[in-house]
Image (cartoon, rainbow, N blue to C red; front, top):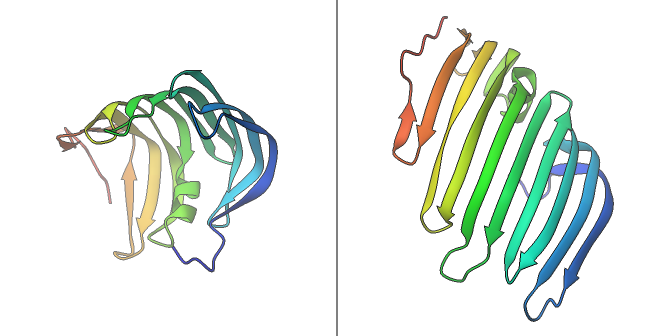
Length: 173
């Protein structure tokens, strides 16, 4: 990323309240970003709701919807100097290939179809545990470096801390 180029833009509205910032910090947030663009690609509207449950313990719900993306990230975070505790769930209802192509800086072109999936993250920031699945739904895209179209329909990739698994994956070109 270039520091001289805008990474994100949109209209921010809402409240963020930091309680006792020099002690046992508390946080309340009800924030939205309308017409969010990332790398000049329109991605929709972002919403964030967050609250403190106790000492350094935070719950949040983040959503991104519209313009080819339907994403929900929810869970908790416990701040700790030895490594924050994570309990997160990501639900990707839809990521249009056209949006992904726009975010790929030209590596992917002519996208159609969409991705969906779900992921969970637990453990600590020093030793995270994660896993999930990413599904290709009637997707087709051109890899610019190869100038070749690839198609995947009803195909799935699994991933966790030990690797990425392409069991019985069929890619057509």
